[in-house]
Length: 385
Image (cartoon, rainbow, N blue to C red; front, side, top):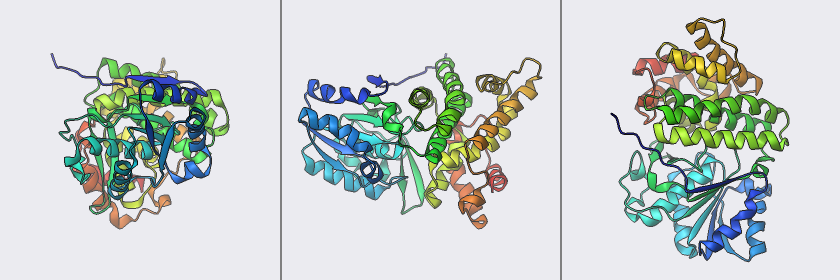
């Protein structure tokens, strides 16, 4: 019998306003100073302030590092690491989507494993010996589930690639999933991050490493995303739908973090590295195309996906039910306003071969249920173009 492993957070809080527990958790754990990792937009629009207000009221000292951009880079991680080393902080609080939380993970790991200070050696499954500096994660988007995963992604600008880093030592000790921190997300970002979560759930459900426990998480996540995402895109201030998406993306992360992903992510990562395309947009655009490619190899599971998406498959053949899953995902992407062609995102046709080579070499691609060859990746990019 094959041995399976599952790694999850020690503790998480859920519910609108639950950021209020942050000060108590910091105090009872004995931490003295907080190093906040966030981005400039979250500072500018007051979202980070919703968290620092809790620290201010409790008289907890903190220092903010906000030089994190979408698709964070090796240079930014090194800068953040240098600031952390000087700060005297003993805990990191990450406020943001995947970019700040991933940056916090890299900073925290390097702080306790200084032999990886070059950052690039963290790519893949790095042999770190020590757990990260304690990280408390407060997600502000409902997409990446970085607060519950053992993965993080950093862009190596020098080699124009996204490094997927997988490390059980990087998982936050505490996650605070507060839908109120997500209320200011604009529709476009809501749609993109929500489709990112759906991609995690679907790829996590059909990946080669999937098993009963991960399947349980992913199917529930698909069902919840199909229900809540259209509502929250239409009504961004709907706290109940925001909460539903926040929980759904977390559940998806509980699964895929432990079983891996597939070709959608393999193809999305180069688009982020070469063009700085938001990860959720790249995933959402590619998901129906790659699902079509994988249909025959995942036909039974696609029927389950269709049902979770709300499709009645009782009168459909197995293949029709599988096709209904692809169609339902495509319809959802269109409904929430995801671009339908790479050419709409200023991708250049002459770059497709280079993108295909990067996708073929990506760490996520081998998890795809259908074995991928280089020509397949190129064909799919051309279809997406």
